[in-house]
Image (cartoon, rainbow over all chains, first blue to last red; front, side):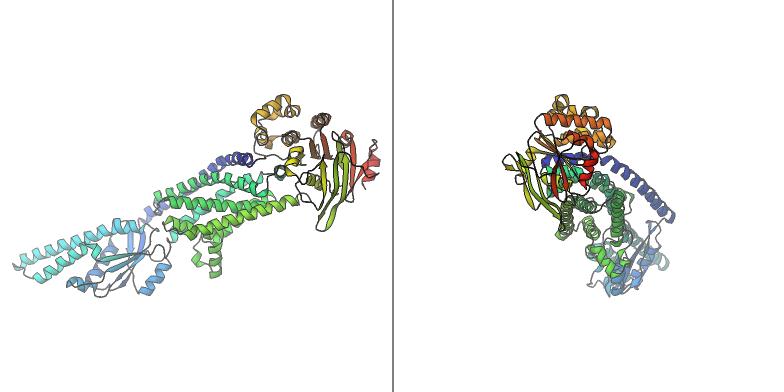
Length: 404
Length: 229
């Protein structure tokens, strides 16, 4: 039998998986839809999400504390904002543990320098991308409100001036007036005051982002279950006949795996759509880059390689499906797909990171925030190759054992 | 019982052990082309192992399978051309139709031709050509398996219990095909437990203690069973 005929046969078998997979996808989409409705309802009920931004340094001066107080009391931007005061160390720890969405460092003497038009260090705003769409809040919602405050202050200054003139008949406090105007000028020109430091790569995408991405990868693992008939229906006698016609294990597995590329493309499209839909609902910000889709495709292939290996090494239909399900659930749980891994003991965290599921999640997260590196692919591809080689070895042993 | 003398097809000195336990010690069988050879023996005596060695599926320790002047165990291309192997189960792709299964082995034109005038027609495969294997009866599957196994018109067919667990009508179809195949000058080696298949054979070999002994079957089943132990 030729490699090409065997490959075409495997493609025909793969074609049979598309319909059940779509059915499975419809069920998941339904569950996801219910989840999304609950999410939207919860937002409606609470009307706000809480964004906590730590403030390090000089924050007890009149203007800054006043400004933060005003922002905390805003009720028309759709978010509740909190600005706890803390030290740099506390802010770093809270940021690392994802208890803060961001933090800002206000240099000592900042406000005074503004008041007297002296040189000053910039405010440093430390943030990460992803969770809760902080960028959206910061740039789209918060800054216009700050501008609004400043405009109000501006109006207040002139209102005060008018009132003063009306009461006293004259207003000659030019020093105070100039100070107010300079302050406004500086504040409106935000780029001179604030330096934004993005710690997206050094840290993570946040708990919610990790959870959403983890769950979308769980779908990939679970979707792989719909491919089980492909493995179960392949009878050993068929492989014996194929072997008698000169096709060896390596060629068989390769033909089967290449045929699976088609299924991996199909699954990648479905999961990408799912992640995009989550973005549309507004739970996390989603950029469907080619890097993200390609990484997802590679992860699908790695998961299938693992599936090839598991189905080759195990015997019995129920044992195979059950083992696949349990192994996938265990791996994804330990790697923090369902529950933040930071709460696990160190040894479990380390194990979860090194497992195929952990390697997949790391690459997936980096692809999501567009910070892919070569090593992200190396881990996934290495696991894929290892599983395939093991599958070839096991099939060879298995076929030889058949004749005992 | 006596050890056989070689003619033009030889199975010589086949040896095979599993975990130091010798299953085939020194198997020698010889016969002429165009014969049907039956191999019988108790369960676990190494019948399937012998067939799988002759089909090139399992490594062996020593031995030869001479067809004419070629050792088929050392010449894979020649063996694949001459030998057709039908394993005991159904070597089929369950979720595909009979046609899709046949397309793995035949060209489309050859299938249509064979359904009209050839082996596929003789096996009655045209009756269930579009049915998925999953929905086929045991007899249909077995006939389709044979159809797949003989796609290249092999001169020597190796079968492992070809009619086990089939109904009478299906058995008769397969016997009829095997007779026709042999009468066309081709050779059959088959492992069997069925009296009806034994009657079809020109020569019978009993596999016992890792060796093959020629046996002349005279219709006395009780005597035959006694020889197996």
